[in-house]
Every structure is written in C-alpha cells, then in structure tokens.
Length: 144
Image 1 (cartoon, rainbow, N blue to C red):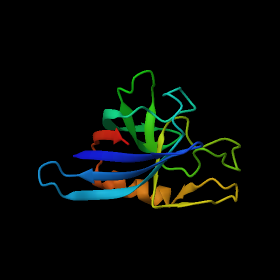
Image 2: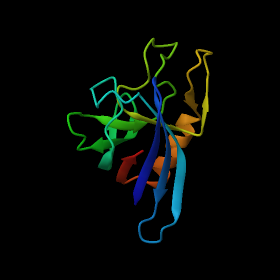
Image 3: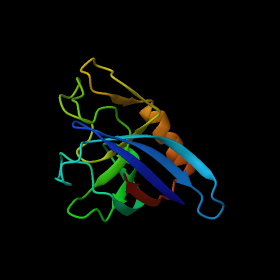
Image 4: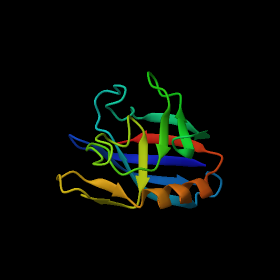
C-alpha cells in the first residue's frame, strides 16, 4: 500500500489530503484530511516534516495506544500519525497543540474554539478506520 499527503501551507498550520491506494490494483482504499504544524524548516517540535517518502509502521505507546510511526524522517524522531484536534493552535484543555510534529487525521476542518484557526474533527473515528485498513503500515509520500 502507498499513501500520499498533498499539502496546503498556512502561516499557523499545514492542511493536507490523505489518500491510501492498493499498489497492485490502484484502488483507493481510504482517504481523509490531515492537520500538521506549519512549515518551519523541519525544526523539531514546531514544524511539520519535510516533503519526502517515508515508511510508516505500526507502534504502541501508553499515551496514544496503537498508532502509526513515520520512520526515517531526517533530523526528527517519533513522528506519529495519531488522533487529535489542534495543530497550529492550543488545545484549551492542555494549553498546547496536540502535536509536536506529528500528523493528525480527521474528516473535516472546523474552528472549534473560535480563535480563527481551524482544527480537525472526527479524528479518533477517522484514525480507527485508517488502522483497520492499514494495520501493518504503508509507504507515505508527503508532497505539495
């Protein structure tokens, strides 16, 4: 399986369209939206990752449970695909974004907290569907 994220860059965040395709048949298996931090030159904890091709593998942690790990990101470690809502703005509950360079998935962008910055919603359900379709991971191409 191979996935692509086609990005749109904004000053406070990066939005994307995710599509997962069966490489043998060309069939689209899954699609959704993504939300990441803005592009700040791949700086750790404040930026989305660089465009490129990455291997994505399943991983487990106490914080996120089952999730996906984007490996071999130059100059970065533990870039994950997981659920959450806030990237580019602070989650009112925690006081900080739900990511530090990771990729959130969801079905729609909405300004949840009225700060004029979109959040991604239906993230947990979208993530669970992605894990059902690709439990063993995939190749990911991140592009503009």
